[in-house]
Length: 313
Length: 223
Image (cartoon, rainbow over all chains, first blue to last red; front, side, top):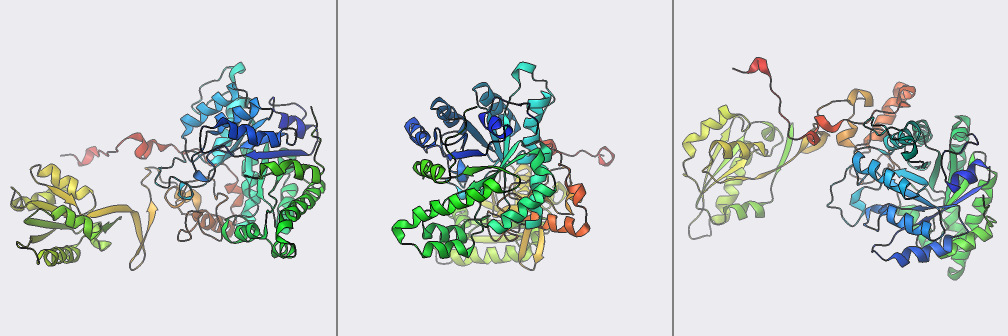
């Protein structure tokens, strides 16, 4: 990872300069109400380097990630626009990539996308023309080789200069294969990756040791995903109901020992302790804070975890 | 083979509600093998319809016939003696190809599909069938340990599994095996992980339904 910047991305500048990066998350509203985006943005400005704007997360119809990204950028944030493979074919995805870059989006995070059976339109037809690894490669070729998937040349001054992101999940199955799938994303050309919410630190340490050993962290920036627990109920729910998340009993036990009205505070403290470990962990370049519908707590956690002030580069 | 299942009785009763004479036509092809539309199932459906209408003033007349195949004009011709408006409705108990071939050959008849054509699959056990193919027109299962990610992964991923794979099951349902778990296990077992690091090419969907309805013409077989 050389010092030559590939894009105008602030996140890229932060990571390339060796600073510990902080990214946030912003879920667009289920309406055209712009103020919902600007309100959430207020809590994030100055506290994160870039914010993920989700793309119809959990297959629920929301304001488009491109529109919400643009609104976020008009309100002082740098967007990390998410794009899922569920709803668009290669024609629409390349088209939206060109459009996003033209509108000043600097980061694009590519995901397979939750299956539509989870969402509010389970009757919908899905697309999955490309998978996330195919799309990472396609975007890299558009940016670096100046070629659309068809082979059509993109003029030098019209190439989408996007910093390419993806997700990695050390907690899904098969366990031994998860690092190999991350390696495939690196091979496809991803610049940075953010993980699912991490609770099982033992399994995460094992995953990262392997990623470091395979040289992946030399080629791609790995950010660790953090979601503070709001309550004992949330911890139990995530343990039992959220696929791809493993919740150690120690978290449940620790929250059990705390009065109900103090559990949120304890959750923030636990997340902050995790962040301190990530700061020291080999191969980790930053944290990704996912406080979905809890955005107003972002200022608290970044302060508690000593992540502010953010560097201005 | 094509796996089909009978439509709900309420829907079929709706087809015959205003009819006096109907003929149920079965098929000895795939739907006989998957116990959906063979001679036996034709007999059962006809009996159910007769029984249901027996309390009416004018009970429904239900005749039965089973063809060798309903997807072949040669056999479709065999039921010409049943046509010419002898029946108020023809109930085709084949995959959806059957009622289409009957309608085309006998355009004056009212043909109804009484099966839902579900998928291309095989029997896992007696009474259990599962999808194994999506007829994408370009088979690549040899690259995936002999398993088909196009039809058996809910997202048709060529570079799976996604983050939703948990305990060998798909995020869509605990009833669905994650085919990518099976593919990875097979590849690990065979020690071919290096091959697997290669990023699989983007699928060309033209050979699938995305290229428009498909047709095969074999010149050497044309008379």
